[in-house]
Length: 167
Image 1 (spheres, rainbow, N blue to C red):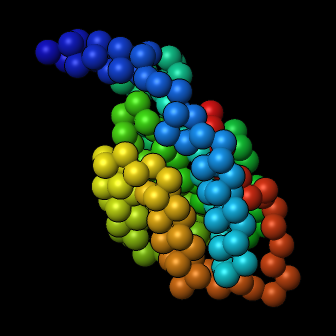
Image 2 (tube, helix red, strand yellow):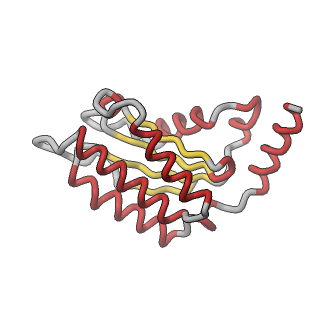
């Protein structure tokens, strides 16, 4: 039974449409603009990433999607901010999964459970195939949350580009 589920997962990832079908360049540009506009309200720095399918090395042995998101967090250097306030919003279309990875400076201030609410709303929108709306709402909810717990401090600087990326 486990082997069948694993084979179906491989097939689903192998045959999944490119991420640009759900998130074409125009939508990614809108997401990037939403990130830039909202970041003036807080000290956080958001990076939005969408990926259609997991790389094979993450499918082998059923590695968790969280491990892939953490890998992307490191590869894109979301951690590389002075106050450790980077946040990765990672969307994996092949498994309809969303992971939000906050850096230590954010995780220390934002209450547990806050990210799950944002993920829940985004997932609901994505299940209805409202990709742009779900992503924009998730980015705005993240801005609202960060505005509460990480207000802009003196000497605020932007270490990360306002990024929306298709892998």
